[in-house]
Image 1 (cartoon, rainbow, N blue to C red):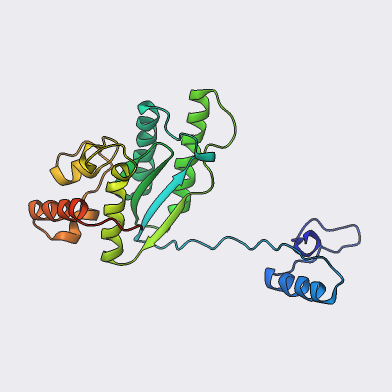
Image 2: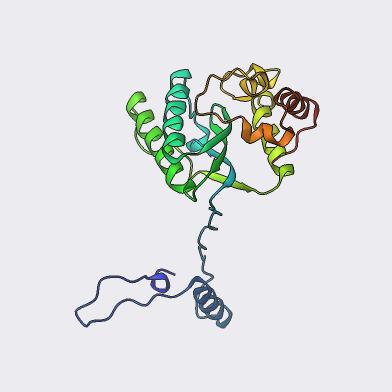
Length: 231
């Protein structure tokens, strides 16, 4: 497969560049060779599906540690991550509607005024990985892969994601009620007592009306009284 996927490289002494073929053309060529019996079956690796990055986009973002190892070994790790997240949110003028830090992964609900989710997440995960390795004396990859995100386009999806993030520690057996987990923003959202300066509760509460007390009560009812659905 390698010769078919050769991209533009240095010009040879004969003035020619290696040929560049599309993935579709490679698939057709491999299929033709396989059917003719002139080649063994070939594994074709397709490119990753591009993310939807738009100004004003709302995203459910999550990232896992390598091999189900602990992404946050202690509360200091979590404090460092939140400090880095706050810096990225401030730099890019993002809104963070919800956060939940687990052991092997994290969840974020983000609104990006510009189409810059990739740049911000690359900075956040990269800086956290460097800090993690330095602090724990480890080397190599910290995250399993690139961050994962889902583009949210409806209030229904937004409400499902909001509940899913809040209920994560309960489903994992870390606490009995979502408000008991200190590394989640749920409690401060429903009580109105903010302690995370980078948090924007309005991202979630605006779904439930302008009256903030009523909106918090409706959010609590949604999270704690509705059967869980995967997002």
